[in-house]
Image (cartoon, rainbow over all chains, first blue to last red; front, side, top):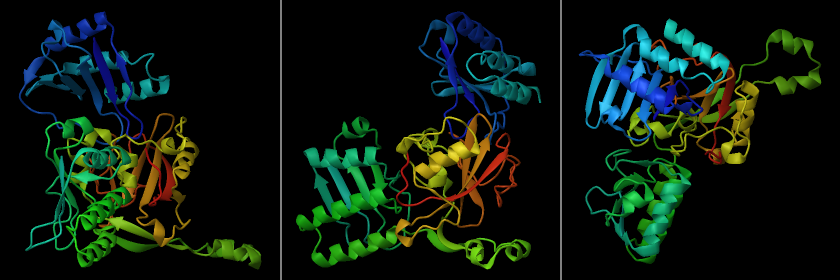
Length: 120
Length: 297
């Protein structure tokens, strides 16, 4: 099982929710399919949508030691222990998939705002 | 076991007090729970005179048990809880005859100065009423519209204090703007039982006023130093954000668990939070003063 954090808030804590076992396996399979790239993304650290952070709630064989995957603007920074690598998320497909998983966990207006930010 | 050193001398060795058992535990509980700001041993004011207390754990279980670093500086930045702790340590040193009466008096005076080191007090003037408004009012109502001058403090921009990996995720914009590193991701009104649940200017404002903040130009006396100037904005329906005016004239802020900075979403230095690029935080709610007696959690 993995936990998702929507990194978009400043004052209030970021919303977090858990994926089901089935969704978690699907996410990890998609993550494994992404290609490694060499350039480190600049990222965005201002006010508003900054991306999604995925962390396993408890480790399984499927996550291969994943500690954190930070998704933003078509790139994923994956950290496993002391190691980190950058993956390309073409067309922001996996980021959109994570946005879809927000349904039912955040209100509709916030959902629409995040979806629009990803489509920009 | 704990060693507490008063960092103050240049030539002579600094006085050190060793605390054991409940005395040591009590100091650490005080630091961990009452919220004085702590810094790395090499951080903070490094000039001549009182520079704070350096606390070093002398047993390997203490740091983890209290969630504190093995060595840190406290009572160095004017935080009232830090200054209280420093006064307590000075008294213990005096009783243990580590400090003589003269040095104890000197330290007490230094401590009062430390409360305001790195900050400057400045006048904050309101605009006078527009001439046409003043003309339209009966004379007895004019005094309420007179320009107001309040005194405020401005501190140097010090992002390193907030961006340390041990603290960056545990403090938010309200912590930064209040200049209180509580490590609780503080919420307006939570400390006083009036936390806003609706994300709109009146609701977040009510929480902040409940914590003890004042609207701008509702002056605080000198006894409430430091009186930081803060600005509140809201992303309607889902969040709020705060800024604090800095000594350099620009505004600093800390978006959630990200790094403290003095630039907006366009990378421009923030000289005016009303016109800064703020993403979805489209509603400007107004300016406020923080104060020494502010409750924050």
